[in-house]
Each structure stands twice: as structure tokens, then as C-alpha cells.
Length: 226
Figure 1 (cartoon, one colour):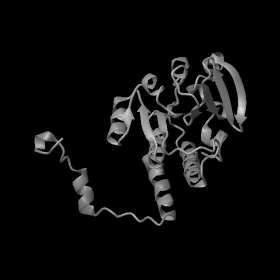
Figure 2 (spheres, one colour; figure 1 turned 90 degrees about the vertical axis):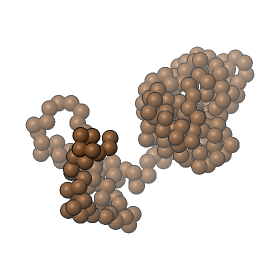
Figure 3 (cartoon, helix red, strand yellow; figure 1 turned 180 degrees about the vertical axis):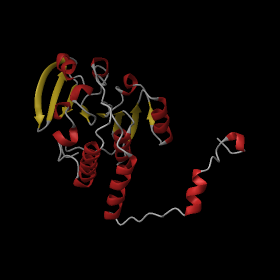
Figure 4 (cartoon, one colour; figure 1 turned 60 degrees about the horizontal axis):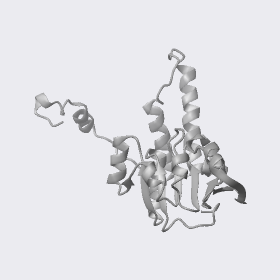
């Protein structure tokens, strides 16, 4: 909103990807009064989007309806030639996922007959039929390239996890090369510390509750439920 000087309320916002980032973007857009369309390749995430109250459509269908497109997939070519050809005049594009490959900028430039910097951090592309498509921050990660980046309330948790993970690696040199999940105890430690800064206080399980949770009560052979 700051970059475009436009309001989101009343817009149709198309969000590609319904992971944690896409879900958060959808929540904010919907809360501002936008109509939200989600595009997904994962049936589980697509179902979550429907249960959260959003429409789920293929990008080819959504491309002709959106006013603002936000990619959050960490993939490539999420928005490309067939989509650009269907977009409304003055459609806005930005990337909140990973690298700028989510939006096929070379394809957009190939379709355009004119390109101009219409506003700081906005490049406007004029198509052969006169439509304009506006690209924010050259499809780079929009909250950093066209904003102030992540708030400190997010970054302190990220840095805390990185620091404790580095310490864990230094103490566990027998780990095999590869990608390893952050140990749950590190996640929980950071979450507890952060929760305290918000004034949150957790309940503590009783001994009986811990024993009950540890039993095989969900085993169908024991008469439990699955």
C-alpha cells in the first residue's frame, strides 16, 4: 500500500501458494476487505484455503480476475506469458516468496512494447493492446526490496534459532551431511522465551497427564479411536 499509494480493500487479491507465508498474506488481505483467490498445487493446502474461506482456482483462471497478484511459492514461473496475456489493465504483481524467478520477468518484458519506472519501486509494462501491468521491486522479495524488511519481533526469533542451531552443530559433530530439522527442544526454548516477552504463561502438565498422553490409547486393538 505504501509503495503503490493504493488501498487493498475492494481488490481481488490472487495469492500463489498457501504455506505459512501465503496463509498470512491471505489473512491480512481478507481482513482489509479484499476478495482473496488462492492458487495451489497441494490438495491439502488447497483444502485448508477453502476451509479458511477462500476461493481456490488455477492461476490461468485467476489471472483474468486479479487486481493484485502475490507469489509465495518458492518455485519458478508461477506467473508467466499465458497469465500476463489474460490480466486486467493495471494489474499489480509482486513476489513474497523467494527469488524473483517466481514471476517470469523476461517473459513480461518480451510481451511489452514499452517499459517505464512509473513510481519508485514500480516498473510499468505496456502491452500491445494498451494494457499496463505493474511490477513491484522487480519481483524481488517485496517486503525487503520495497519495504523495511521483517520486524524485529520476527528477526529475534530467527536469529535465536540460528545461534542455538549453530551451537547444536558444534556439539554434535557426528551428524551426517544433509538437511536436518531443528531439534524440537530448540524450537520450544525459543518459543518459551518469546512467549514470556508477550506476557504469556503456559500451563504445566501434571504427572498423571504426562502418563496418560504416553499411553497407547489410540491403538484400535485396545478399543481406542483412530
